[in-house]
Image (cartoon, rainbow, N blue to C red; front, side):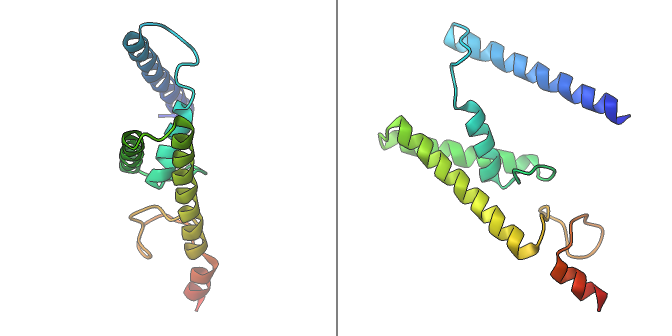
Length: 139
């Protein structure tokens, strides 16, 4: 399938999912309000970052997103049970996200470039090679 058709199909499927989510949200709340959940995009990005997906894009697995959502949901539920204010809840989510991005940064510094999970050091796993490994391969 050509790239243009695949991209168009991805936009159509994504739009259909967003439309269904909007209908479900409207039916649960009972009214349509454009500013109902203003932190939802932040939480979605935070769940991806906490799950280990690089914010630069291009790599990752769906199970990482599920893991990030589970970690974020568990931490939000724990904070609600501790009666923490809503402003502090957002700060905790932000701290989790900053911690996840910091771990990714240290991982990048160690390996040179992003290496998808499961990519081996040899074989057919496509990944970027660090300068240290490139020098070792030249010898």
